[in-house]
Structure formats: structure tokens, C-alpha cells
Image (cartoon, rainbow, N blue to C red; front, side, top):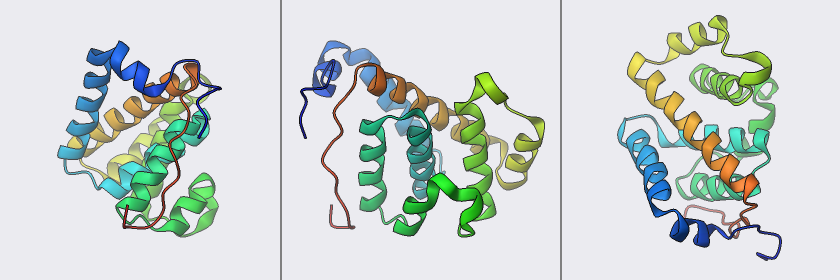
Length: 159
């Protein structure tokens, strides 16, 4: 992929702001270590990145999702998860929460969405899911603002 459209290349960002890069990676590791299902957190990261229009993060997390074996049909339909009929109640609650937290300025974080979330997740899981959503939103703002070029697409579990 061409980096000509990038304002600042991703690798340049990691070298220019190593402390920021390390902090964001540490947040991701904390979420990974929390026990939340990795396929669920990758679905969330793809959906939030779609909403924010971050090509770098969409492709990056599609690559990870393919690598860990997330159902490709779910990846294809995550933008229309409400109508797809294939997402579990737990996935739906997490996706609804992710969408709320990504569009805070227009809809806030309604109690009804939180109550549905709490019916599917423990308090600890809600905490780490919220951290995951906040972190991917931060990455999206970096990726869109600095116009990181997306990584090459990868598919299949052999990646």
C-alpha cells in the first residue's frame, strides 16, 4: 500500500512518540489479559473503526480477526449487526455499548444500553470492555488525523 497520502507514517509515529505508543499498547495488553474474549474485542475494534472511518485500524483489526479465526460472516456483517441475526446477546450488548461510547456527543451512554450490557457482562468485564472501546477510539483519532496508511490485507488463520 502506498504511504503517499499519509500525513505521518505509522512507523514514524511509533518512533516520534514512543511513550504514547507504549501506553496505548499497554492498554491493549491489559484488555487482552483481562479475560475478555479476543474475538469479541476484535469485533468491537472493527466496528468502532468503521464508525470513525479509520482505514488503518479497520484493516489492522480485520487482519487480527482473521488470524484468530473470527467468523468471516460476522466480520462481513458487523456494520449491520442489529439486523444480521447472527450475533449473540453478549456481542450485541458489547457492540451497542461500543457505538454509544463512539458517538458520545450525539447520544451519550444511555442507562438502557448500560443495563443490557450489565446483563451480559460482569463489572470487571464492563470496565475492560470500556477501556478497549476508549483505546480504539484513541487509535482511530491518531490514524485518521495522521492518515496512517492501512496495512496489507490478510485472510485466513495461517497469518
